[in-house]
Image (cartoon, rainbow, N blue to C red):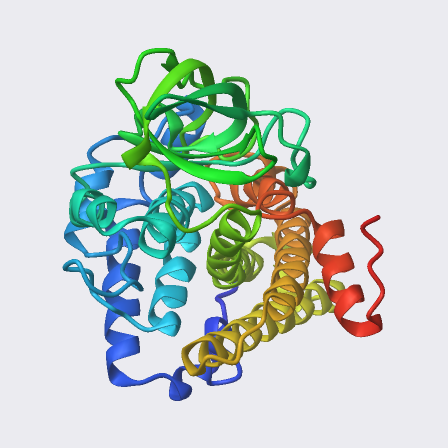
Amino acid sequence: MATTAKKTDLDPRDFLALDALLSDEERAIRDTVRQFVTEQVKPYVGEWFERGELPGELIPELARLGLFGMHLEGYGLPEASSVMYGLVCQELEAGDAGIRSLVSVQGSLSMYAIWKWGSEEQKQQWLPAMHTGEKIGCFGLTEPDAGSDPGSMRTTARRDGSDWILNGSKMWITNGTIADVAVVWARTEDGDINGFLVEKDMSGFEAPLMHHKLSLRASVTSELVLRDVRVPEENRFPEISSLRGPLSCLNEARFGIVFGVVGSARTCLETALDYAKERIVFGKPIAGYQLTQQKLAEMALEVNRGALVALHLGRMKDEGTLRPEHVSMGKMGNVRGALDVARTARSILGGNGITLEYPVIRHMNNLETVLTYEGTHEVHTLSVGKALTGENAFR
């Protein structure tokens, strides 16, 4: 006997009616980006993922929406609120974490570093062009032997007259191969940590593409190689000489992740719910079985809990009360929750859950990377632990 899915008046994307907590302007920008992702990303991103590529024509479209550096002020930038920026990250990652990473690295790492620590000349030169997508940036902090411990970086900067000579390498750099400028952090002979703007055509600088990824495949991931790269003094950040510089930028990017992973989880929930209503087993949809309903209920709980946490942290950031430890708790909780949702959705879809015909395995693989980058789950756990106890367990 054929069965039809029963209707419900509750929106699983917003079971707790959090939409009512948003302003008209916040909903408008969210809906604009949601429509863009629905029309321009979701129908094609499975193929991009399978081919391991990010189409270059996507960049001007994202720039046209004003998303690069949208939460920064001055220099022709939109000055959007933190909540607006977070909602954009959520919608982008509902399409794919690689798309959100592109926007996040451009705006919250590269542009933010220049906006926060750059000279006035550097800001004027790069920020307007990066906002329009004319110039792309990347952020070089992580090294092969210095991921969670950036203070152990081996990339060096040696003074030579009025220039600096940079040597070293960086790993897992989003946008590196397509970037016009790389924000590179290096240790000077005095032991300071300085930031440098390394331009793509500087002699001795290379950004080879990293291959063989099984996650974030619709994203450009690169290595940065610096061999006696001569960088003029005017390309050095003038006011920062410690890890406070790069770490402040990482906190900006982590904030976007707190929102972004809710988008991944939401897409997995939507997919699993639709599938469960249509998949007939023993004469009725699997949505009618207790075990499946338990899975769906737990997934909806995580999606809505994560959305509420993200929105609250966004309001705190706009009010100026957000601390790094708050972001750490948001990232560790929301990423873990999103991974649980993706894995549960995969189980509901059965064999179909491992194909790119559905978005679930793609989101699940992407989230395995998000769990690690911008601070591992363990690092954020210790950050929260230190805030709770006053004891530093990192050393």
